[in-house]
Amino acid sequence: MSEKEEGLAAARMERRAVQPAWTRWTRRMGFAFVALVVLGLVALLGYGLLNKGEAKAGALRLNRVAPDFTLNLFGGGSFTLSENRGKPVVLNIWASWCDSCRDEAADFEQVWRSYRGEGVVFVGVNVQDNDGDAKKYLKEFDITYPNGPDESGINFEYGATGVPETFFIDRDGVIVLKYAGPLGAESLSAFVEELLQ
Image 1: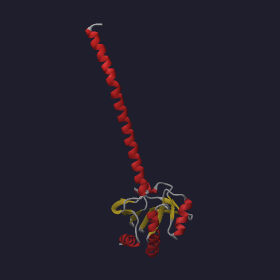
Image 2: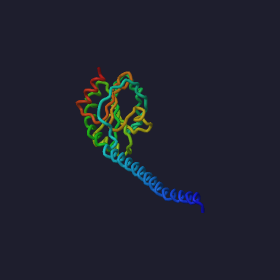
Image 3: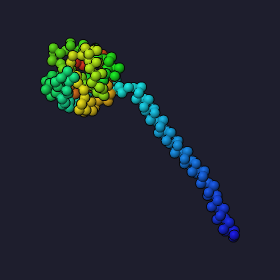
Image 4: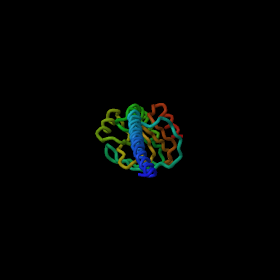
């Protein structure tokens, strides 16, 4: 074998020796990438479980037409938003499994009873729930204003990002305020007073 051939053979052997190290490195990088993706998904899941799907609290002023909807009510019958044009409407999106919804439930009923004589309409839209649990919730808190399950994606049309969320709709059918998070009686009454002006 000539010197040139020996050099080529040595180069081939050297490439073979380097190749396994490169292969090992790429495999390690691949495993590291997969591990990072899995850890990221676990962290995201943990965050979601800790927040239980509840929206970040706060008020957001809006000025957009409220999408019309018809809601089949738990007690029978239906509620159509457009049939209530000319009246202020408080639309609450809730779920029986939501602790913050439970915190505000009695306050909503109290404020509803205080303002229903002034023509204010309250309506509850139950999301991501089963009818049995929702009906128990309504009975537990003695809620008398209209409520029904979201069978047509009302929460998506309104841009809800969690529960509870409340939309305040003026007499002209315009959403003037969205409140994410639980509302106490005092804040809820203040927002209803704004609707009545």
